[in-house]
Length: 178
Image (cartoon, rainbow, N blue to C red; front, side, top):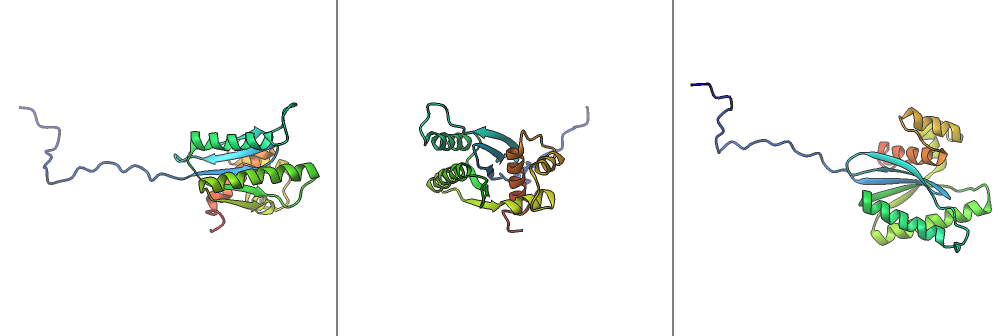
């Protein structure tokens, strides 16, 4: 008779099954603006990045940009979430009045959206992001794009590169704790 190839299993010895990896939380990083850069680390650890345009259409009212942004957040949360935390670039000085108004409206939409869902959010100063990504707190747009490329990304523009830098700052410093 042939030798048995499978070991005998007794009922008092528990079988060991591989333990699934601990789920990670979905984290969203944003560079707010008419062209919003975003980077998302999903629950599976996969990082996805891109840009979303909130340029108003010809016949849109003044609030449509913010409604579209809120709907985009909701869809992102539905498809990739639930989002557990949001970090965004905290801009204290803008080049123009329109840019500051748009930023303020997007930030108000983001923070109220997060409050309604109990999602924590935090702004990260521009200099902190740039220093973490490039070593210089006043790095220009090209340096930020180069830093994202050095990490293996292909950002479409500086908005996406900034969002990537924010996400990596949040992950590597545990949201500024480490």
